[in-house]
Length: 223
Image 1 (cartoon, rainbow, N blue to C red):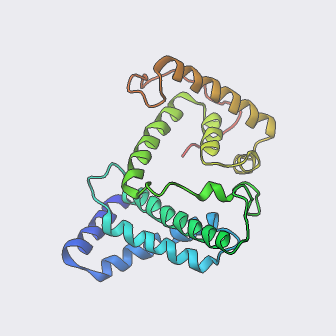
Image 2 (spheres, rainbow, N blue to C red):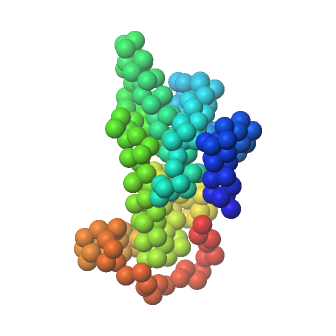
């Protein structure tokens, strides 16, 4: 229902020049902007400045999104917002370097000590249109992970892909370190065997059905 509602609002914005529809769509996704900025803005930059950059990214998504894209508007908006914030991080980095204040790209800038400045720097060629293909591949990869991994293994690997530290994964899953380590080891073994057999985790030859052991001892929801 969310995608259908977004498409209705986008149609009104594009073909009826409806400012109320644009306001509604912006207000709907501003919480996403705030979450992204809260998670990623460096300590040396003002939060409000990054919030404004994220809002500009949202407006760009509204202008450029097409229903022909293989991702929902919400995913495309996320890419545009994140891209805009990445560019703002790069500008801040260049400004700091130009003043002679050297900052290590591996310096941790958040309280969790899990993200460094280099994590937020991406190639300038990664425009939102190019990132659509990455998102599409991520969706295919996600389906393979869900199919071949147990619920715990899936959540652990998903956390690793997202760049979470082991401590963050432990907190989010409320599981002891040993369980996390075992799940990571099993998952990597499974994925390695798939790659050896089919050449890639995105290969169309990977079977769409598999018998999989469930984690009976722990009730873990997989979103």
